[in-house]
Image: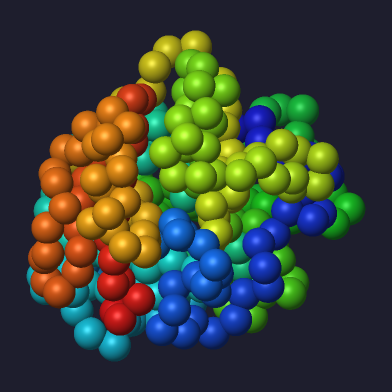
Length: 280
């Protein structure tokens, strides 16, 4: 599916300027829920490290999280689990991951040199001009790259960014307004603007939505198996969710020193709730 998601209004579509990753995932001390991590099922951990670290500029976490390798970018953690995925990101409820980079041309040069397919033209409608594998309009430069295990990544240039960082999640849904309402009710997502584009925001990420004719597939067992939210006082938060009628896939428990619970949204996006991930 082609993503009709960007216009010149995206000139102000970046998150807070990125910097070198610190121990805190997202600098939003007042927020109960912030974005935490992308959890990837991968056939080759080393291949993904070459993509996320050596080429895109992420950093390896100071320690592993049990069996999971940890990669840090600004505003998020990427967890790599050595499990062969059943497919890539395309066609699922989260069809691609959105990252910001300080210099898109330089990033694309590194990606090409490393042999990764740049797929910008294939991912944008014909009406959007693509030159040198980029959509470039005043104040806006974006591109798409296909990473290992068919992980589709959108790159948005933010010259104020000090390093690669998390930028957005892009949901596909038959009824996007229903998805928006659920994320507002369940996790407190707030209406926001990216230029003139209406989006939602959870500290650490923007949430974008594209309407689809057919229901997308669940993220479960795909390369992006689930997304992760970091929650203060997670145990009570889970009790509140259940009291409000939200069924948890896995109730609150302590795992590897973290508070952990799982829930799947009504459209098939698996979500891990954590407390304590910032120590990694």
